[in-house]
Image (cartoon, rainbow, N blue to C red; front, side, top):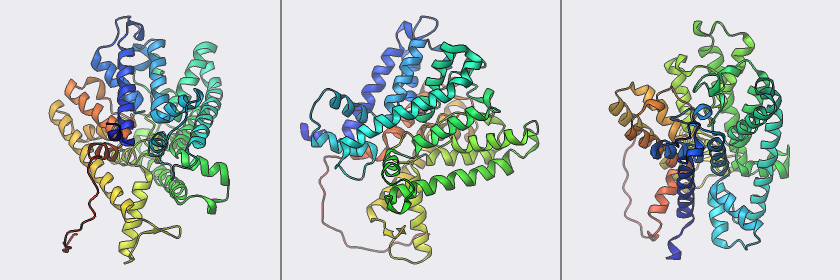
Length: 444
C-alpha cells in the first residue's frame, strides 16, 4: 500500500485535508459576525478559494466573517501559498524528525525544484524569506491603513493584505467601505499600489528564482535557464499589457476623470494583478471586451512554477513560444539561452495548455447555460478560478450551487496542477518502452 503513495497523491491529499479542515472551522458559529456559522457550501467555497490562493468569494470577507473567520482564511492562504508540503517539512524539521527520500521527492515536485539535493536547505530558505518579505510588506502597509483604521485594525489590515498579496490570493478586508470593492478605494494611493504590486511579483517569480538571486545576484549568466526564462517572460508580460491598458484601454472617454498619474498606476496594477493576485483598483465591468479578454489570457498564464501564483505558468507559454520559433526557423530542436529543450518538456507544455483551455471553456459554457449569463462574463470567472486569480465581474456571489461547484473544482485543479491530478490517477501505469510503427499525419 505504501508504494501507492506517490508524490502526486500526497500533494493532492494534503490540499484536500487542509480544505476540509478549513471548511469545518469556518462552519463554527464563532467564524461569522452573526454567530450563526456558515453553511457547508459557503465554507467549502471559501476554504477552497483561500487554500488555492484564488480570492473568489460568495460572502464579503470583511462584513460576513468574524476576526476568527478572517484568521482561519488568512492561515489557509498562508498554507496554500507556501504549499502544504513545504509546511509539513517545516514541522518535521522543527520536531527533529528525519526527512526521508519520499518526503524530499514530494517537496521537489511541490516547489518545482531542479533536484532532490539540497531540498531541505531550500525549504528553510523559502520559509525564512517568506516571513521576512511578508513582515516588510506589513510594516510598509501599516502607515497606509493606520490613517484610516487606527493602530489595532490598521495593523491587522496590514498583516492580512501583505500575506494575501505575497501569496497572490486577492482576499481583502475593504468591504467595510463597500462590499466586494477590493482596493478600488486606494486607486490613487501610490504607496499601497507599489507595495502590493511588488509583493505580488516577488511571490509570483518562484522559490527557485529566489534561490538564484540569493546565490548569483546580478550575474544573470550564472542563473539556471528556468530562472532566466521566468524573469524574461515576466518582464514581457508586464511591459506589453501595460502599454495596452495605458494607451488603448484607459485612454478612452470612460476614464476621463482619472489624472495622468492615476492612469499609470491603474494600468500597472491591472497588468500585475491578473497573474495571479485577484485585487483590483478599478471597476472591471467598465473595461472593454478586449481588455477583459486580455485579462483572461493573463489569468490563464499565471506566474512561475513553484511560486505562490497559479495559472499554466509563464514557463509553459515560453516553451511553446520557443518551439514555435524553432518550427519557423526549421530547427531540429527548440533552444533557449544556448540550451536545447527536452522533448518531454514540450509535450508537457502542450498538454497543460490544452487541458487548461478545455477546463476553462467547459466551465464557462456550463455556467453560462446554468445561469443564463453572457458567455464572456462566465469565461472571465472560470479563467479566474482555474488560474487561481480571484478577479471577478461580480457574478460569483449570485451563482447557484452547481455553478459554485464548477468553480470549486476549477480552483482545485488550478492550484494542485492538472498534470499532478493525471499523474496521481495513472501512477500505477508501468512504463512501456515498446514503440508502434511511425506514420506521418498532416497538421495545420
